Amino acid sequence: MVSTGAPPDPFGGIGTYIEGLLSGLAGQEAHVHLVGAVRQRGLPRRFLHHGMTVRAVPASPPWARGSLPRGRLGMLAAAARLNLTGAWYAWRLHVREKVDLVAVHDWMCAPAGLVCAVLLRIPVCFHVHSAETFHGDGSRGWVAALGRTLNRALSRRARLVMVPSSGTVSAVPHLSGRGDVAVVPHGAGRAWRMVCPDEADRAAVRDKVRSLHGIPDGRRMIVFAGRYAAHKGVAELVEAVRLMLDGGADVALVMAGTGWPDVAADARLREQVARLGLAGRVHVLGRYLDTGELRDHLVAADACVFPSAYEPFGFAALEAMALRARTVVGPGFDEAVVGSSEGACLRTGTMDPAELAAALLEAVGDGDPKLGERARRHVLERHSWEAAAARTLRAYAGAIGR
Image (tube, rainbow, N blue to C red):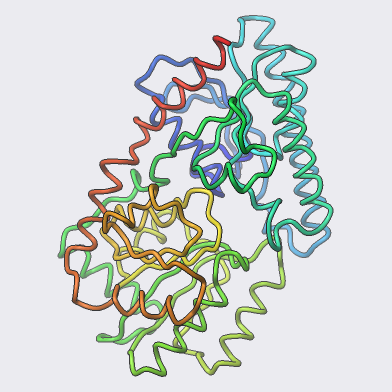
């Protein structure tokens, strides 16, 4: 495998996927080597994780590099190093012992996949984790154009293309109608590392998080976690909170995340909050939370919200649901993934702030006391990493056998 994220405690959705997948593969018949970017300093160049070999390529979180274009150039330099290391490692390993398949995760690792498929003649599975470079704001600029080009190039050369949801197939123009595309749902992100609390622990965590943000008792706390991107519905969410307050609801919103690579997104969000007079009601943190902090915020929330217009899978929503959080998602989520048709969460049909406000009022209310229980049950039954790993291995085996 070649990936932009690797354990321990990786950053980003792909890193979360890799960490979960390796945990699920631990008890199955697979001999895995991972070449991946790691953010921790002082790690050995090669180490074992769940019995699998990780070849670490040091990299800083891309948002730590500051303003564009310097940040994007640094990101591409790190990606070039990762791809060179990945292709070199695959070749050396293939010389010593036959490599059955190279799994390449998203377009930033596509050059390594192209080398393996074209020059080394090793079967390649291309994991397309997102269609963002093809739609909306994420499709603008030269980095997005490069992403689309590499995506198409490796999609043509790969033995198998794997996506996490049927929505991703329809969102990537060149994948629809192909017989070599497999829809293989993921596990539930980092939920397996987040202990679901009993009522006493939940009350203590709730008090701690509320105190951190100065939210008084009796005020309903809503939590968002994700990138401050337009397709994540952040502007509509702030407007929905304004509508709730205008209607007499006593609520506060905590927004964890950052807009990177759009470094101006944080400022735009804060300007919107100030313009609507929501200071003290909407807390824009401007940073991602580590696993422990995120767990505490999801546990403490009266409702969690992820109002995306497009979402390839949705780890954060499933993590919230696994913690019994009453969860609202946007129209971009696949209903089969989040179980909205089965009552596991509330899903809006549009991005209209009024519809979102109504869903949030329902979530923070007392009309459906079993919503959180249904959410947790759905995630435990449908999204274990062991099941996801087994599905992935079956797809790999089919591609190798062609």
